[in-house]
Length: 565
Image (tube, rainbow, N blue to C red; front, top):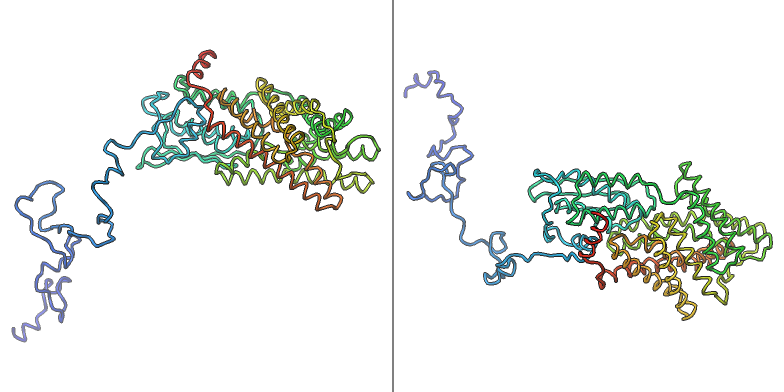
């Protein structure tokens, strides 16, 4: 090329962006300079396909693009290599030739036990629900089923039921409508349930907050009856029918009026004062103090004050009456009057439920319940200590070491007082009238066991209380399993005679008189008695579940036919 030709202007093709700049060596093979994302990287061996591998499928590789076969041996530790401990002969140990054995649950036990057993299983090991046609061909309305389970769980948790039993009820509702992959979760104030149709579908989660608690065991029994009917194969309860019955349960009025509750609180306090050695005058004084405290608590509740202040106000009238009788030099046991008033305020059910939740693994709910009990107890302490402090300043001769019960206990009178205390407790808890007699007798049996061990046998009060509470839990669970109902109505009121009212009073009195050591000793004894009650009730219930088989499917169906279902 001549110099003139070099000075000629270059064409557009010569100035193309794909032309290497001057001074840069062009690659020898133009095919290797492609920038396609389908190009095989350098260093990857690509064998040429044979004629037998040609195909016109839409999944075939493009012409000129081949894939190398996988390497014959992966390095040790690779995720694609077979473990050295694997043997083909032992492969059946992981997946049997006949398949995984089906888990079957016996139907001769109440639904609570069956649901509790499945909740403790992993999701993949739970047996599939039996096909129950309670919806149309399109399947169950998942949001409505979850909402129904949450509303039922809310009523149970607000009524004082344990977290595990609430989860069992919610799980039973979901399975009764064909939702097997459900996971209910219960905390102290929040309920949630999650449902996932399959491993590839998105889960559906719903939640509900429990803001108000009111112990109404009549409503609690009705909710258990609804869940029992939903779990039964013979009673076809649709979603609309379940919602209607749930609305009726919410609208039902309490079985006892307000004046009956006030009289019941007076009877409870009077019976408790007789139980610790008081006479007729002590009975009347304790009853009057408890009724005044109950009316003051209702007044505070109507003004919207929290329960902490309600307990504080309710604890002052019994203590004030006891101090007034001491200042008047009346020949009565003021300590028995104050002890009787404290019996009506001690949160026995909340304590038992808190310990039960802790023993069953619901530690967050257990901690919240025990913290609630602590707040109520602090409110009682503030109310009683305020009155006792002013009483001591006025010259009231209150003796912390005064023995209650006397050296010569009266068994028949104490048994009658324990029956009256359990009866009044059952009325305060708004129990069904058909269960009041049974729980009253259960409370009498508990006191007989305690008295026989403590007064006759000389056994420590903590051990005697634990055994008596175990008997209460055992009998309560037996009655509940026989009727396919909750065990709360048969156990809560029956532990009333065992509550540590006298130990609590003497502890507070010792602190008020600057005898901190004796006061803390009495309060420690009260805590030990309360824990013995809670553990005994839970242990008795677990023993009945493990070793006793009460109720059968045949009896249950016959009973439902008798009621017209």
